[in-house]
Length: 329
Ligand code: SF4
Ligand code: MG
Image 1 (cartoon, rainbow, N blue to C red):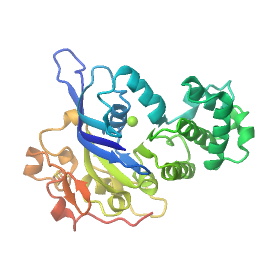
Image 2 (image 1 turned 90 degrees about the vertical axis):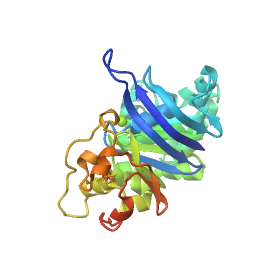
Image 3 (image 1 turned 135 degrees about the vertical axis):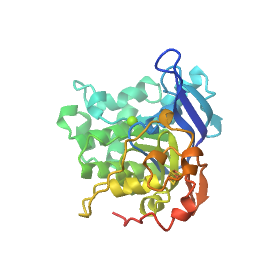
Image 4 (image 1 turned 30 degrees about the vertical axis):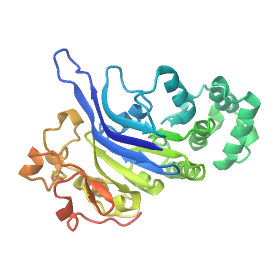
């Protein structure tokens, strides 16, 4: 469905005479129909930039190389009219805070129908009927009544289900969700994401789920891409990546996450995260990696295939027996 190939994005220099800032470096990623892919990283890792590149919403002046292939066509090559069609019909985006996107004075029904009616895809009646059916699919009882309610009458979790319904209404092929549940309680977050992942599977759509929450991503996605400083450091099946990490950064993320079920001490990752443009010539994680060698600081590791996943680390092979395994939550 979606193939991102060697994507590289540079933003213009902040000051005149400055260097352009690399924000994404050689990112390759694909999403198959029915597949949910999690892109996990700290803020500034380039995960949001990656989805912005897919919807062609990068900041003005961004220079992009590589390819983004959607159903066999280049997204980077779309003309203005094709791009508008692509955004309106083929992809949908779910944002973090529904209340920031919903007009509090209009009913949920008006809000849901608005986009598809405006794009000419459906009549208002058809849109409301489709919304009702979708609301039932995502586990909202009493769907007809909900459509007549106002946003303040709905809980955060219900509102986020409305956003899922709105995203699915135009029958897109691909859903982009950037930290869609961060504003919600932990248990509500996983319920909402599970509902979304189920719809993605049932409808054979693709999902790119952007999050800083490795546990949540591991629980609801099929594959994971772990990003650090604009680079995908590890990519593979979610279960394997989250239980048997092969990159030191993935292992450090797993060791530093709070867990409800264990009382083990948290190990913070030393140092601070960097952006891609601050990385030297070597491995982007070298400054914080407990296993870094001189080679790591001098030479950028190319992704290599290990046990069904892609790992960008010079020492991935030998660290396999060293990095701690993690029990499934
Ligand atoms: Fe650590 Fe070196 Fe691997 Fe980078 S390449 S993650 S610095 S061991
Ligand atoms: Mg972000």
